[in-house]
Length: 411
Image (cartoon, rainbow, N blue to C red; front, side, top):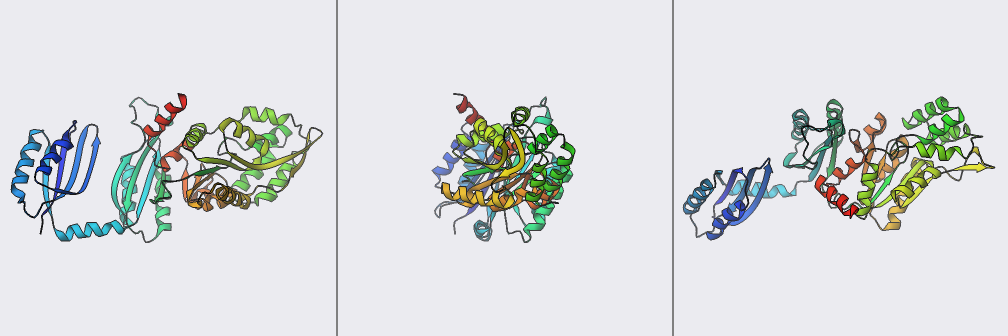
């Protein structure tokens, strides 16, 4: 039986290390069974699992490797691996793989300790840990920074609902966002992203802004808040709020549109998605007038929202056609995906209110963005600590990838 050996090398990294070490292995005809490397602050940790040829004794190989690696001022450890251990490792490839993504303004040891503790309790083993965000400057304002760590884990969690609850609890305790996704082909091939508009793409509820102009701001805002929390039927509450706008001059719409602020990261996210070939849509319970403005500014492909009825330059207090409510949003997501020839598992939906839950549950990746507690608890994923561009991390993009896209867009 051919010997199996695990070789671990550590020390300061320099060009040519892998080439020189594997060159010696090549002279003895070693077979590479597994290999991995990580470099943190120029310090290398390098592991390789090798199999000896039947005709080769291990002593000469170890002697030459030991001499060469010490000559490079590196540390090395050799560990024999039994056939049983190796076969158990090979059998592990059948375990499901998941991605755990930590997002925040900064990542602390307490956060990682809590998250890794939860994975262990649920029978998940960590394979790799990678930093997706850029390096943080010591002088950087952390309130505007982005930090992201991605874990690749394996295993068969017995209770996914409890796992999510545990992550949600830790998320609140440590002011971070934690996403847990199955690592499959769909995760790496998303093609369509649909967005709610109010309090998602923009930092306001437009109907509340219009109500202020109509002198019924407090009354409408209270109804809006209850609807977003899921305490009221959306369509009914929407008609009640629109009715309070009766008599509002049409000219007010442009004034309100001019003062709307885009959500943090919205422009960056959508510009990158467009560059990468994603299709995008606004599915809004708000108003078409404002959604079209965002479409023109951001280059959104599809827009579905509610059309205010305006006659003789005044808002009538009614809407034209059917209301875009939660059920309609989910249906529109399916329609667009079918039209584009995109599998539902390849879609992403982003929203903050209770009326967004149907489309969040329909999409392959549903993200509750800075959402109300009910929505955050019900959605599979949520982002509260970062801007909308934090979604790029959920897709597995590194900061360097998106920086390169930005440079391409400028050229």
